[in-house]
Length: 227
Image (tube, helix red, strand yellow):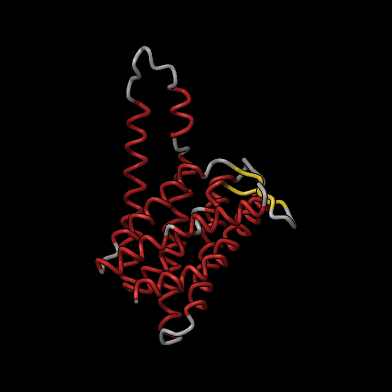
């Protein structure tokens, strides 16, 4: 993938957060941000199995296809935390976790329903939508630990700096949380199947790039919600 296209993709994906902030400004509720958050989490779960080659110009890395989507969930977590507080953030994380379980259950039911005699794509349907149990468990464990860690660290930094230096709590909550998510997920999901260290490094580099690009979005979103 061309690095310019990758950069534009990240900007485009992050841009969706602004719709949530417009909703917050109008209705004073986090509903749209929560919906976006859950959507990004679910999409990441579905596409995480595919490993992609990313050309960053200076180096080429290998990472899961979800690596440019899932990091935006940390931006959304920080936006909710900034505007509505840590308790609302943990509530959102819990809702997203239950939604992941529900989606996995419904997909499992759909896969196991007896196909019509003229439906010839059962194998393809199962292969594309079926969650490998190991990937699914890895995703859930990493999600719960990393997202809640981000919420705690962000809130702690906000109290420490008395609400100042937004970029500081945005960066220093997301960076370690992304590292936790990557190490836990890749290790559980791909141990003995794929080379771990190159994959962890590739995923981390991409996530941190997204995290850096998202810093201006954090300020834009706060401005949109407060003005």
